[in-house]
Image 1 (cartoon, helix red, strand yellow):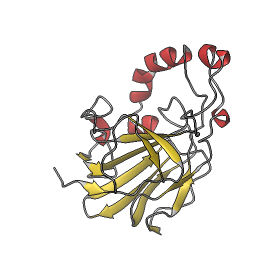
Image 2 (cartoon, rainbow, N blue to C red):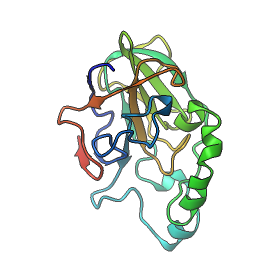
Image 3 (cartoon, rainbow, N blue to C red):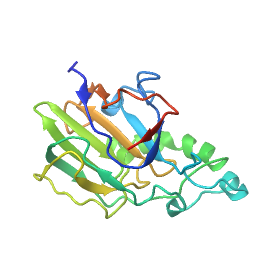
Length: 204
């Protein structure tokens, strides 16, 4: 396994940590698709909410633009070269409350489509030989970089969306040994203040 890779947070503002490898490994319940050490960040308001929760939230799916994170800028977490981009997947409804149960039950079908079906719109950046970082669940049509383009830490690469295997707008980040997640192994990551645990509020 490669050494731990230090990354910058790919955003500014307030973001809640979920599915952190600081709490468990594999962080997303599987070693597949290079996700062993992946981490999720959900944009939240000053009250720690990604969106107001109403009776409707409990009973039915919600449009992604109801969430404060939808369309927020997403930044390059490291300097490097863009090796692949995927755009065009729809930003589907968000699922909280009872609808989230049905969505969870349909995850096997999404996983059958491979990592592409799970990651949604994404940018993959080669940061050093044998190491890439994938930034996933971006908003359709928002990606502003192309393969072969050099990026630096903090460069805009797209916007927070709800594409792929996502219950609400958020950013999924993972480092791995190959741009093809079906062939890759996961690489541990850390950030300037260490690896945050679930429930930690990151403010940048």
